[in-house]
Amino acid sequence: MPARWNRSVKTALKVAGLLLFTFALLIAAGLTYSTLHGYMTWWFWSSGSVAVDGSRHGYIHINKQSSAVIITRTDSNPRQSYLVALSGRKWLIHCGEWHAPRLPAFPVGDVNPPCSIFTNGAEVSTADNPIVGTLKAGEHSVEFQTMQGRRVSASW
Figure 1 (cartoon, rainbow, N blue to C red):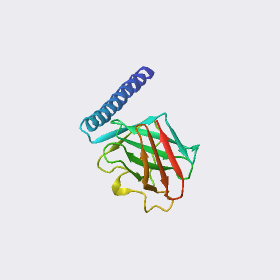
Figure 2 (cartoon, one colour; figure 1 turned 30 degrees about the vertical axis):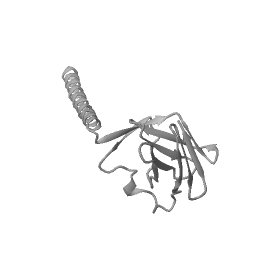
Figure 3 (cartoon, helix red, strand yellow; figure 1 turned 90 degrees about the vertical axis):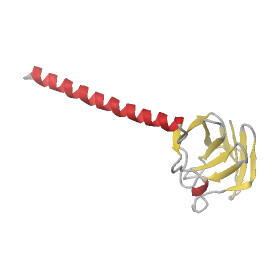
């Protein structure tokens, strides 16, 4: 009996492992396809700094093309993220209730992005919305003022 049971357990583990491997392969194929065809943008953590009124509070993510940054402030609860476009006409928006995760990299799909001009944070009561006219964007730096009088600066 023990030998037959041992053989059954090994077979079940092999099947489960194969199913798990197949599932992971399908997920990887989907992510690769979406990335290569432009349906998904990857954001990568930067070792730069975010300062709010001169004190370091936050982190930065840069997209793969280096055409935009997501600046996340950690000086308030909840955290607040801002999307800043760096190529062409420079602009920035508040990301509403969403804030960038503190991960080395994360994908954002194009169908319903969490931070876009269509779902900005203007209506969120806790939002410290940016004053767009104060945006100063350099090659590796961004600075702007918020409605609550904070000066947010980021460099990478």
